[in-house]
Length: 326
Ligand SMILES: Cc1ncc(C[n+]2csc(CCOP(=O)(O)OP(=O)(O)O)c2C)c(N)n1
Ligand SMILES: [Mg+2]
Image 1 (cartoon, rainbow, N blue to C red):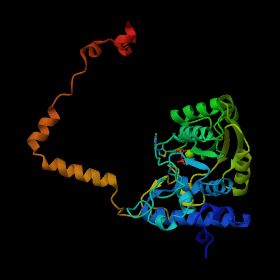
Image 2 (image 1 turned 180 degrees about the vertical axis):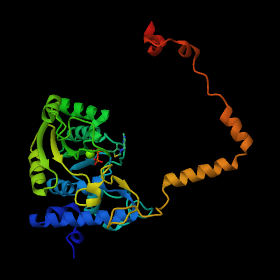
Image 3 (image 1 turned 135 degrees about the vertical axis):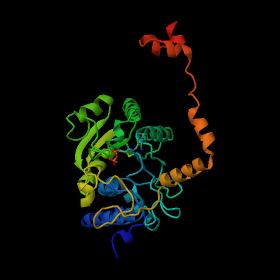
Image 4 (image 1 turned 90 degrees about the vertical axis):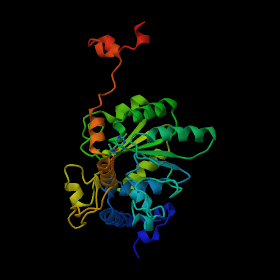
């Protein structure tokens, strides 16, 4: 029996002995690689968040404590330790687990999200609700370095720091979105990350090795003690533990179609994707339209723009609306 076989809920993760953590991390990686090799999905990000997932479920008590994952494509290990191992083997299939957090799958999935940069605003809202109800729960947002470059994340940070709400922000910094992240806030980016968060009103802890469960757990337990918002800066490696993903310079196998786990190479022919099916259906519909009406449609001129804009010279008046020129 593997260690993973004994885990059907977060309490089982908390009861693991420290000496079992590295082994269970290896089992989680193997389960992720197996299912993604079979079904396709997000690989690199999920291989990087295995230890972080274990530490989060040991330091916090989900679903009493709220853990919100930004973008949602880093939650495969989370699914595997929250009672969804069977469904995970059929990842992204009609009868299997969704590739993102899904509320109807588990009480541990709070937000259904694939739109990046939203988690800090969610966390702020959850913290406001918690404080109005005078509850003692933790609210945790896990946000990637790429997602942190989105404008909405800044709005969330600003609200958190200004309000002083008790929220823990885990910055999952692997230095990449798909490609290397364009930001001075990533480790090695040259910016003063601590000063940036401090200026906005958030404490800063770290950086912490994101592949050392014990170090992560210590940092998260430490963060639990703050009465103000705090950032825990965690350094992870995209594709960690699977050589073909670590070696993929383009995107660390961020997202993949079914592949051969021995080599990391895509299987051919690959199963048709939704995009393929959509394109084929459109092409077929296009063929069904008589060619004479197709060409008539193509030749129709575009709608005219308002004359005042078309004739404006380039300059301030080009951008000014009628009301603002008054
Ligand atoms: C608003 C928005 N823009 C673009 C995307 C496409 N997208 C999906 S994952 C991703 C990269 C996210 O990088 P990061 O947050 O660092 O997470 P990582 O993949 O490194 O775990 C992007 C840009 C998106 N999901 N939402
Ligand atoms: Mg990243």
